[in-house]
Length: 513
Picture (spheres, rainbow, N blue to C red):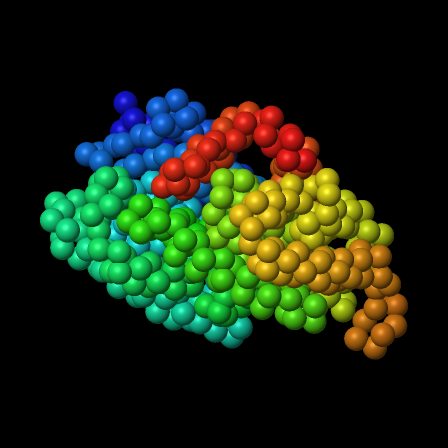
């Protein structure tokens, strides 16, 4: 039964891509795409329900393996994919009218978008570490065409930089996987199952500790490049800023989490072999470096999409710090932050797309007074900016609070102090930029006031802002029961190697506030 459900689930992006080839009306292209993505989202919710009922799902002779961690990623991919498709209806029509004038170019966008979503879904449901590596490499190859979609100098350069750096990084991950496989064969494990994640958890205690440490270092560098962790992050601001805005939301909200997913899966095996201190300390160091490096770029930034790209570097560092603090409340916060960041960053990239279409510029020096000119997008930019900066009562404040508490409970005093200091500085920088864009006076290159017609760029672009905005506000006050349980079960998977690990209860979280 599960085989049929998964086939139906994976067929949605395939059918969406095929339908894009035959539809001749560019407005209906986006609408049909959104319908397919809605089906995908609800089928994903059904899969998640089955996962929570069964603990895990295996299919196709154990080739596919879905647990709560997979379910969390399925939720992120399908939700962001759906709202990105809704946003594409209006945004890509404007882009076509202004830049491309080619219906087949638009068809190619939707085919690539669906292939991108399919490869990300494949990444999080396969059982083999080796196939995870293949799927992550496929996400790079497909999304590179989306990054370079406009075929202009800057996007093409960003696309090549993205391919080269991520391919080099993924080569390091391959070395780590090979070393892990050698450790299995050296320990007398079944060679045919040497890359099977489910099997690896059962024999991890037999694996050579030194070999697994070296393997994890390669994995962290390799998949960390894909995740955008510093100092392997230099592809991230270029790719995020040059891609079409819906693709930027997917890159920032979901794709970099696929890299984190690969690190987590291998870290669990390594932790079962040698304990969690080695992996958690390394992840924590990379997390703090990522947040720290993002600070000067955020403070001096002039390009709106690059601002949000460097904010992604900061937030992937926050997630890494939560995983690095390693106790259950911090890990819960890190997983919760993955959801919150995906929603906030989708909201901000969509708003940035509206602003860039309206002002015909991505330079923040020219994007001023958005509340007066675009009342809805301007207000959402201000709300989303406060949420992105970590202000209460929004959801990112709550997940950052859990991570901070985890650092305190784990006695990581220096790391926690740096964590707080970095976030305070970034809060100030982001707030300054966003206040200028929302309340400042509109000027041209000669520093004199200019007139721009008041109004939004399209109804679909506003509709796509509603879902992430509601989630950003709602999750700061209340986590729905099924989502809470999904996060809790995923936390237990990651902390399972710890004898003192424990699951959360709503009462514990309420008391922590």
